[in-house]
Length: 328
View: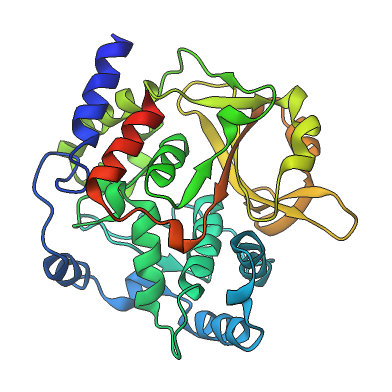
């Protein structure tokens, strides 16, 4: 069953750039933007004053010239201390849209917006607008880098995010190449469909639940590797500023339970920076291995290394081939 599920994933994946998750043709870019703008700007972009302040600082200090990992951490530090806010992506009852919230962050939007800002600033402009950041968020948040308003186009599970963004040249999935990497076997993926009442779109659109389960089965078939908790201290020296760190869980439901960024502080320690539910804000925490050891449910980590914007894959055939090779 797992082999046939994976083949189904590939067959669907080969059309990601041309269709939605349900096989409905993606609309033209103009239609996509028009549908997105059915939602008011106040809903899809929060914290514009903070955005402009941060971007002005980045321009004055020429962060664009820094390697992308260091750029990510510069932006992440600007978000340090911002309050934790759960379910920040569930912004509407029906229309899915790229969105930004720089007033309150959860673990996904913290790393995603730090990455998005670092990618955005790589293209030199006199003035950056919210739409510039929204385009970067759309590229990394949705399968094939496009959103036409369908909730199922969003990448809901972090493990899949690593495959998708590797295939599109946004983030190299390092986990399988690191010492001690071990595949997670026989994992049941079910969080979205079991806890559907917690997700605004699934709660208000019952017809989405069955196809969401199909996507969960496809995610379950992915060849997901992790670095076991006991091996993480041994590879911390190989991690770099801005690496995306997924926290692998021991429990069924998903492959990962949390996500953040690697940051090397002045004391030489590679720490875990994340939007913390426990601290209720964005924090620079213990070493990554130390953080893992504080929680019995944490099994280890997944690692992705963001790539410079000039490595972005824009050719559909290349993207499809990359995804096929990654999935195996």
